Length: 386
Image (cartoon, rainbow, N blue to C red; front, top):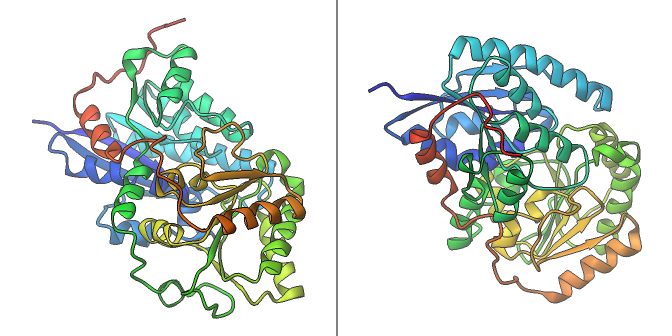
């Protein structure tokens, strides 16, 4: 029996954790053949090259596409996406997949959707139907309208995709594969490695074993001119707290150069003794770091999604996750030092984990996705449902 060829495009560091358990399930499924394309910042060392981690996890990479333009501006984002469309179109023509999977809402994921749709390849979208209020939301909804099959992470998201005119028979609430990893970590949260020894990073040898916080802060693409100001404001607060801190480098987005420059400028001027910086860690190790932290601070979706199951106290700053469904573990605040400091102190004073909430799945999304892909009718035309 011929196996269905399912091509998954991973374009950035967070995309891998968003889809890892689905990759495992597809690769193991007797009716499916996994094709894996790495592209964009997932291949760049400055953003934490994911290729070795992915290959060490046992996956065979079918093709690698280098398409990132320097600049980290709205202009370079558009050109990077254009290059990705051209390169992915060639890859799909060579690999001849039966279906292509695009992941979530990063700006460059629209290239996967366009390249597949224009070649009449059935397109599957994971994690559609959510709202955030910035460029990610535009891309996510555009991916939804180009996609033929939808694997969403919540019932709210499923209802929203159907309201957008998609065929209810092609919209499935599978949960999010990243929650699968979070559930595994929640069941065995022991921090069984030394992050400084395993991943090195940059900064002082902080004394983290008696407690630490984690910062994951990205530029807001619709506010990228303020990225340096935003990160310096946050750095001053974290520095003043004098709590051991693991700080992760930003994603490649408009404004990420400003965020990176702001970090370097602050570090050179102030030499904070409580902050250690990392580019990247393995997905499970990252979740273990979060699960054992006193608080996660920043504007990453991991604070909204995985942390809701882990029950980790979260301080979510600014508009990047605006309107996304969140748990009781999240405190929102604005981009001013007083608001950030107040929210962090409230979470630190809380001093314990929140009760887990299963907003984005129960931990079996990868297996659900693989099974659906093995038997669902694959088509590349829309059934109108207005």
